[in-house]
Structures are given as structure tokens and as C-alpha cells.
Image (cartoon, rainbow, N blue to C red; front, side, top):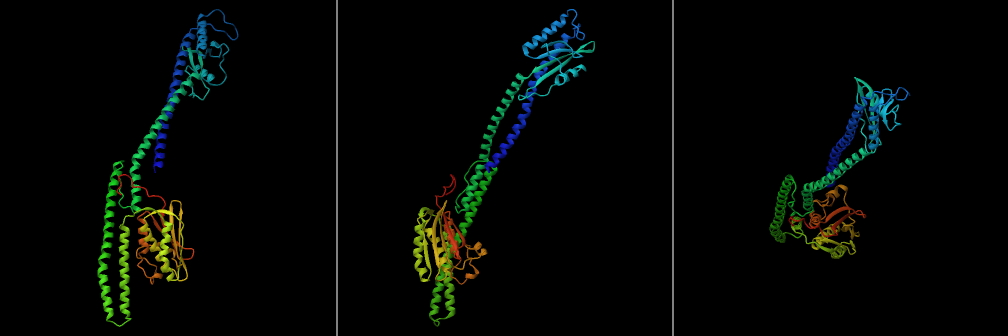
Length: 476
């Protein structure tokens, strides 16, 4: 999320800086060129004032008759101007013949910017401002002004200026703007990093806390992390909601545990009275046998409810445990019962480690193996395998029972749920729920799939690495 927000902010900042930098660069270039154009206009006006009083001129190819001091003065000024600044300058009569010029061989070309400026000035107007010259262009600036005597244009002053020095100044200005833009961009990126960190830090803390609560660490809370007032209020509201949810769950668990415990005593007394009543009835009475079986089933349900409440309430004591050895031990403990029912219980469990509560994991594995033995027919086998892959260690228990349909696989593990095809098998429908609660408290999980033998495969998964410590300020 931070990356996307940074991309958005940096893109907007870059667009703003470009929108400011481009006009600024254009203004800098235009200002530099305008200074040159104004200087050339002043120069042409000065030369026009000198040329205004030149009276003698050549006629066609005829040489100049007599001596015109004003013309000589004009020629000296133009020559000195060209020598100092390297700018071509000349005064040309209406027919294009030179009155004075520097260098001596400079002529008005038939086409191009110089001819256009000359033609415009013949109409008693100053030439148009030349187009903008950029540092990467090798252009020249041509400025022309008319020489007017008695209201008539008698000649035109033309200057043709090189632009190397001007383009250097423009380039220097553009580089300064680019450096300023780069510096502003760096400052903007640093500001964007601080801003996104300030805004998103409480969001990350809230996300981590939500994950902790979703994985069973109900005491986790959002620590104060600054940020906008709206997110601080959201964090406070989230903590209040988490407290309320935890209180409700604690009350629910306490109720289930208390109800299971309180019902166990009167149920035991009721079963005792049933046994006493059975002594006075004929041997093999079906009603007494049915009542006795239902009483025992109710006792198992109460015991399972109490186990489930304890599993959901107890805090895990996580250790780095050899789950392969633990699975071997539990398989060996169940093997006599399996052999009694004609079932082969096989264990293939190399030494693999994972972070788990050994007692809770053993209880969860017992419930899964017990469930597998219930539904496996005589002569078949139940297989227990331990393995590690990536960040997790797994223990798989596969049976050769009737298996489950796709719809049943989605519901297996729900409390009190049992397949309609297996109602005659003893049990309360809480065994797998207890296993899931025991594993979930320590960051593990329980998964179900079809086994290769056609039965059910249950996978117990725990992390291979130590769980992350709660963030500073969070409840543990």
C-alpha cells in the first residue's frame, strides 16, 4: 500500500514540478533573447540616426563622387561594431545597394530571415521579433530598422547577430532550473516518505493486530502509533471492539465449561440411579439398555464440551518440538487398540521439528487418530506421516474409511457436525473441533482432503520457526 501511495504522490509532485519548470525555463530563455533583441534594436536605431544624414551615394556601379564625412563615420562605426562584437551590420538602400556595411562583402540574401526583416522595414516598420533560439539550435538573430528622411524610407539598417553567448546563458539558466527542480523533487520525495510513514504506520499496526486476533492471540491490541486523528480514533475503537469480543468469548467459554461441569454431577447421579433401577428389572431389558447408552453418550458430549472449552481458553506453551518422535509415540500408544479392531496403524515419521505445545499437539493428534480408527474397516490401515516443507512442519493421518463428499469436506470440523452416513458411529462430533482449537492457539492449523486410499486425510500443520513477538505496546 505504501508503494502505491508513494507512486501516486511522487507522480503528482513530478507533474507539478514539470508544469512549473517548463514555463519558467521558457521565460528565462525568452528574457535572455529579449535582452539581446533590445540591444540590437538600440544599435540599429543609433546606426539609422547616423545614416539619416548621408546624402551622397553611388548610382548603379558608378563610384562615389566627392567625399561624404557622414558616410565615412557610419562606415567606421559599423566596422568597429563588427570587430568588437562579431555582429554583421549594414545600411542598405531600398534597392539593396549598400550605403555602408561590415564586413565589406556582406549582402542581403534573396531569401531567409534577413531578406524578410529587410522587406518588413521597407514598409516603415521594425522587423518582427525573431523566433526563440534554444541552446541546442544554431540560430542567428536578425533585427532591421528603417532609415527615414522627410517621411520616406530611404534605407534599412540590418544586424545579423550570432547567438553562441546567448545560448550559453540560456543553457546556464535552464541547468539552474533543472538543479532546483531536482532538489525540490528530492525534498518532495523525502516529505512523501515521511508523510506516508506517518499515515500508514497505524494502518500497519492495525493490520498486524487484526492478524494476531484472527490467528487466536485475542489479547493483542493496537499500540499507540501516532498518525492522523481519524486513524487514532479508529485504533481506539478497534481496541474497544476487541475487548468486547474477548469478553463475550470469555463469557461463552466460561458458560460452556461451567455448564459442562455442573451437568456432569447430576448426570452421574442419574446414571447411578439407572444402574440401581436396572438391578430390579429383568436381565437384558431393552429400555434400560437404551437409557444407559443415551446417558453414556450424553456424558461423552459433556466431557468433549469441557475439553473444547479448556482448549479454547488455555494459553499455549510453545517449544521447539520433535514432532516426528511425538507422532511415533502417539501412534505406538494407539496401536494396541488398532490391532484389537484388526486395523494396521503405520507410522513413517522422521525427525522433524516445529514450534508447538507438545501436550496440545499430542491431544490434537490423539483426536485425529481416534477419528481415523473409528471409520476404518477391519483389515485396512491408518498411516501417520511427518514431514517438513518450507516454513511449516506437517503430520498427516490418512485412513481407508468411506471418505467424504465435496460438500461434506467443506463442513468437516464444524462443531457437532457428523455425516448423515455415519450417525451409527459413536462420537459427539467435537473431536476435530477440539483438535483445531488446540492447534490454532499455537499458530497451527488443521486441513482435510481425500486420501489416496479413498478415505480421509487430515493434516496437522505448525510453523517451523518461532512465532513473532507481539509489537511493543501490544498486550501479550
